[in-house]
Image (cartoon, rainbow, N blue to C red; front, side, top):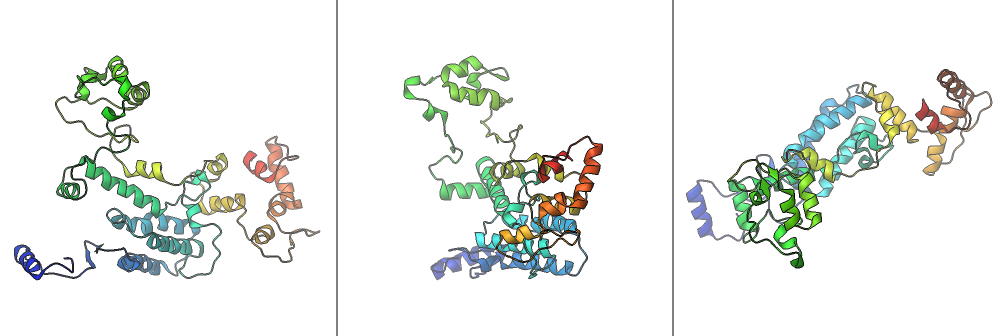
Length: 357
């Protein structure tokens, strides 16, 4: 109970419930229970669990593909239970992201391997120039959408309590645009004879003429092609989740709606081919993004050094373009394979050549 609660109240609650008083914060069903501001210390248990799991894997010979699978299907899944009910501070999620990144790039924690891309830039689908991981920030938001949807649509002791505490004298379902009654312009006129959704239906289908008659065209065009009419009479109206054709909520559709995204690119679809070993596709991704330890990359990040391609009789700087495209050996390989496909090598760039191949 709150520290300012009187002893009389505390004693009465203890007698009625049979539960002894304890101090905040404490843990219940693995969730941190507290009041006042959120502190990172309250969530240390979850960070420790992730670290303990990594210690089990430490020293094992894991490929880069194996590490990505363990992150996606083990480490991130461990946190779903937490994120489905509580909203940890951003610095907790950022700490977990840092741990994932260290494991992905160096297969250990505290390693000094270079991170060739930021973790946020890896947390998108593969065709959007990323690796396919999911940001815990986005997952947390999607899971909170689920809590909000359950609060709005499923009667329960929890939803009744939350409604009485935070939404008294309010209708929690009135969100977004709100009730059509208040959206229709006064000059349009409101048909007071329409009280129920079934008043604008013929049997089990919308009465398009009636809807166009009582609503402005922009609202009618939103309802007719997108919203399925109810099929059961004499029941209360049911909210529809518009991101799913059946109207039922799904965390996946919520995540897809709110996540950070890039414009999909056809080149990445060709890199991440189903059945191709992850390490090969990942190497090709690093080539495409110029994320290999070559002279042009180091020069771009501020390191100047001598560079020499040891594969050439007349050495040139070991840059991406030279090593994979214009050097004598690379040029011979490209001409041999593209020649058999009747593709001319002259006048096209390295990225165009890869795409054509």
